[in-house]
Image 1: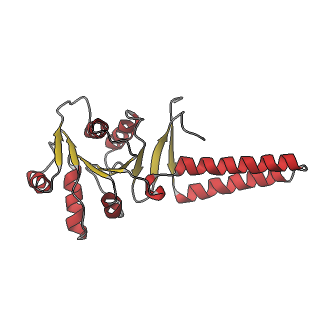
Image 2: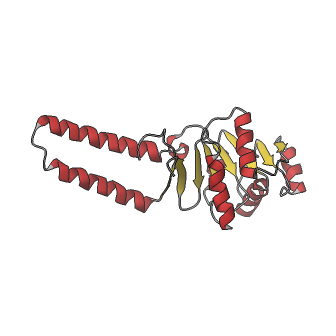
Image 3: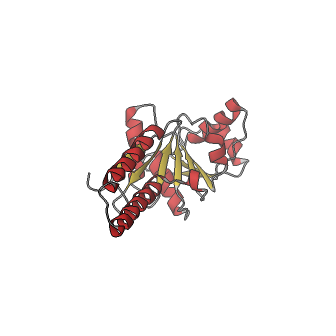
Length: 212
């Protein structure tokens, strides 16, 4: 599509890309025989490295505020600290079941979600009661033209939350659910979203973004 590029990056691929970039400019460097071209080479190298950082930077590494969004699927091993350190914590329907189970199974403290949104048909009554006592806000949206991720992202925007969103549980399971998760984030380009699991950090790259 001309409207966006999907980039999925792992450590090995990133290392190969950077090595190719270095080799490219090393070859060009052998042809540089004047001060002006040398300075231009340094400018290009600086621009490319800056572009890489912009494209791959995310709140987890930058230390900037972010929103954590838990979906109703398997959560990564490193979920607890990222969830607990989020400025805003949100669950999409049954995602609330997941985070409570994660806490119990791993004997680790998991902070309560600020918001649980969706049609709430997957939310267990005992989980709702538990988080109600913690002060969680529940937003029930009946519109079946939108899935729970879209309902949750729209709720995030309606609450004036504009920080980047880290999605947990977007990968794996049924193929149609994975595609639906990815597509849903495209509907809200004003929210920079990152889908993470134990192997990858993934995001959409839009035309207005620098690089690529």
